[in-house]
Image (tube, rainbow, N blue to C red; front, side, top):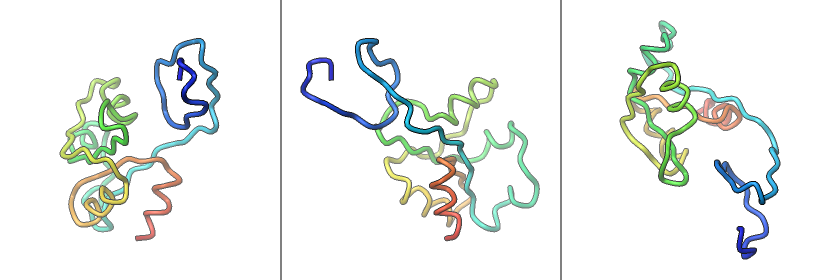
Length: 115
């Protein structure tokens, strides 16, 4: 982008040079999805028990930590990452058939929750 070969990029970009214009388009909360009869639906998890669950993390760029990973580690907790995947659809399909958990943008979570 600094060379001028790209005019516009949409996404989550950290540590951009100050010379590039950056604007927040919207803010998003995260939600957690589990299968309908997951043990977490019986007794809500504590932060420690949530971190200990088997998490699927979606990393669209293929590297780095998710916002949930960073929040948990900031609270002194180490999330148990069972799988890292590049797509939400496949990750949600795995969560629906397992004891795994996924945290994702709330608007997306609401769309997947019906299934």
